[in-house]
Length: 322
Image 1 (cartoon, rainbow, N blue to C red):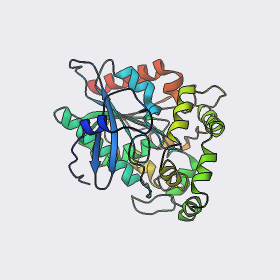
Image 2: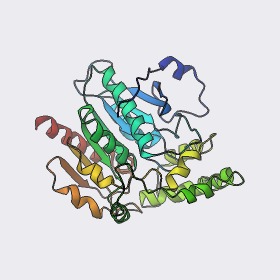
Image 3: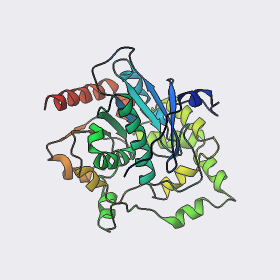
Image 4: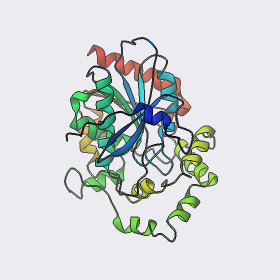
């Protein structure tokens, strides 16, 4: 799919007064496209050339998602290479329009950012790391624009669990999702649309869900506080209601992963509610895949950053030498 050319608006991004603190303390710019809307991107790196391709970080999708979810990786790599991150449509400082959010929309946003990053670096292929459901969107982008992505990193990717395997058997075209329109219709009734989301995103509720994500009582308190802030902004419920109604989950996520031609690094944990990777056998034997299991929850970069970046850097070194 060919995306419309979007002009970055660095000055507008800096001048527009955000309604909340940005998830990352870094220079930001905006990209706009008629289909995607306006997305906010963050960029930083060393003053001189690093000799490495740019790195794009892509957060997950949930009720409280934002680029804060990849903050440890951004803070680490900004010292040694040009690193970028984006708030996906419906989250962070990006547009939170009242519309249905789909894998197509999220993939187009990633392609919009990736093309701009590549342009800024002379057309170079980029490295990308995505988290959880963001991995499905990144995989779709990588399958559609293989020359744009040098490598792809997947942290706790969705699409490998038994429910995803069962959904894939239902058929449908490559854009089919697990959408339940009736459920979204219930959530979006004006009488309780905002009230229900407020209950879902109280500090106590966010802590409960983060403990399920981390698989332990201890969580990242900074993440909790930012999750609370970002979920109490105008339009905060719009994208999450598409998420919980299944609109953002691809029926054929496994096929997307299997279609990737570039080197792929995958890491996942063993604690919490997100540990079902029954379907990873579909890619374990592929020569371009490298999979590592860590003794963490679904956010290993918050728990064991040193081990995560050591594994990823080793993967990049091997990919460069292949």
